[in-house]
Length: 426
Image (cartoon, rainbow, N blue to C red; front, side, top):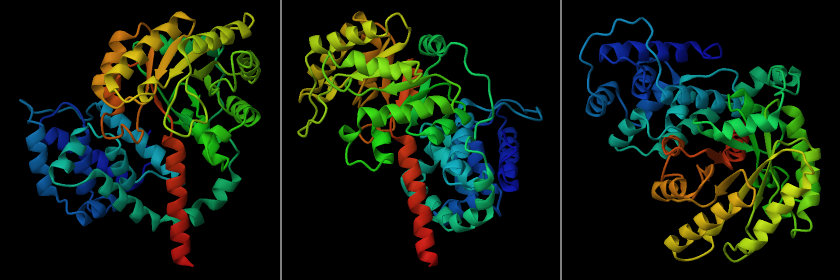
């Protein structure tokens, strides 16, 4: 996992292990890695922390507030990592990849820490009076200064690489059955957005076990003004390329089925021909300019039944999305409407449901409790980004956490940073 880490990043991780032992902790947490970064005094990450007003002494004081020292001396040479640390490392690798940096440095570790807002490190920084987004902006600005250098150093290697960044792997024998297992497993299935083959490959490279296509992200990548401008042929062509690019189950975003219940079977059969393991259908009225509206529950049930019948004996996972939470002014009334619809969709043949526009943990908890089947919820969206984390949804036993825009937004941000640096260098 650490073969792509810079010497400074490896030093920071080694120092994190030492700091955990210093405090008699039997694990390495995000708080120890944050200390490790600043203790790697010559690193980019340490310099960034100093520039935003953080020093070693203040970090130690905050650590002692949030985590007490252990009762006994720990002598283990290498301590186990918490789940939060594993997430930080995965995010750091993802950030480096998105920025086309050949190695993972301490600056990427800091970005990874900021993407785990419920970790002790993020709490320590917040308690010091710092805004996590401001720290992120400082990191991105600093890394933008390295963009041209990174491009010059790795350009030839990137051009020489084969199109696929994912090592050859045996395809899943039965992707539909595998997807069912992932949905029904005790562990939460997390699915970031895929909008082209390379984004799907990055998802798989990071260790995610299924790919969810995102119509919104596809529309953005094609330069379309709105998701409703994404045509069925464009969606199908992109989805098929994604299926061919990865060896894990792929879930298609079939929008509203691209029409009424008569059109839905045609749409479903075309996606199945593209090789997907799952298909998502939604009950929102596409193209509605004034707020969010949903079709009648009975019409959506008819669509789901038509989708299932269209398979003609072929198995696939059917995901039913409801936008009912956003389709009214009384939040409690709409929450009950979303629950009612979700249960009706499951009874009509959906394998799982996705409830859009969830804004709080209380809403998420109510959905998990009241819906009689696997529930999916979106995270890292503008309306809930600071309301809850992916980890908190996992702890609620949400069956699937979807990140509908995380990759397209990250890609655009990275490209803008690189272009800005080039402009400034011209």
